[in-house]
Length: 69
Image (cartoon, rainbow, N blue to C red; front, side, top):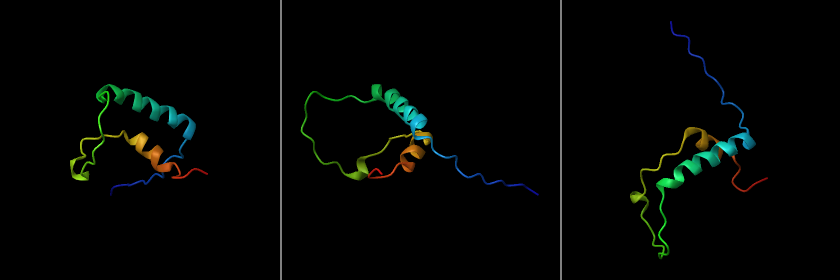
């Protein structure tokens, strides 16, 4: 018989995890280039793909309130 244990997610430490999120963003910056100036054009959602977000950052953002408290 298999013993399956279910663990509740750990409480989110917004201060420590925010530093982790900022570090993730800093590591992604070299992959993004921005032209000097360009007019923004609408993009179809079906063309947006290839974005990878580390799981820890996704959990942190999911735990944040949408409008602040």
